[in-house]
Image 1 (tube, one colour):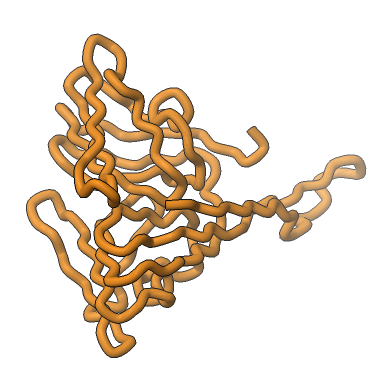
Image 2 (cartoon, one colour):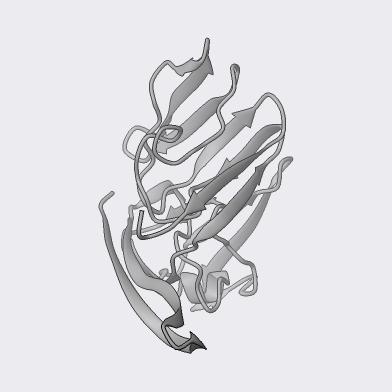
Length: 205
């Protein structure tokens, strides 16, 4: 799976003049991510905050027969597309969440929206959940993306080619194999205890 990312930083509005020598600007980073969805199963994330984060809008390019599986901690909710319509078009996929996508044939999804910035929190429950980075960034899950790993935690990344999981376990203060998720990739998290995944992120960093 190859992901093409373009982030465009733009000054959106002049907020006003605070004093004769100071001005305040509102700066947002907007862009798009082209995500290749392979045939079969893959784990996908929404890397940008869109004007609408519904499945209908995010996966408008999905072909008939595509199915999205969201894990709620105990079971999957299943949302399929047939005859050009989703069974549950209002279902959402927010940045930081994730889902399995089954595609009968490969296609490309273009995510368009705003890069989330500032103090970001992604609550990770005890046990299994599907999560992702809240920002469109790849790298070492802990060292680069700030994931709060504790001894006994594990990450499961799904390999579409083999149909198996690439498992990374954190023990004795280190990963046995550091997980490096791609942009717009989600993964299973197994946490020994609930913990927030907190980041302070700026596109200027």
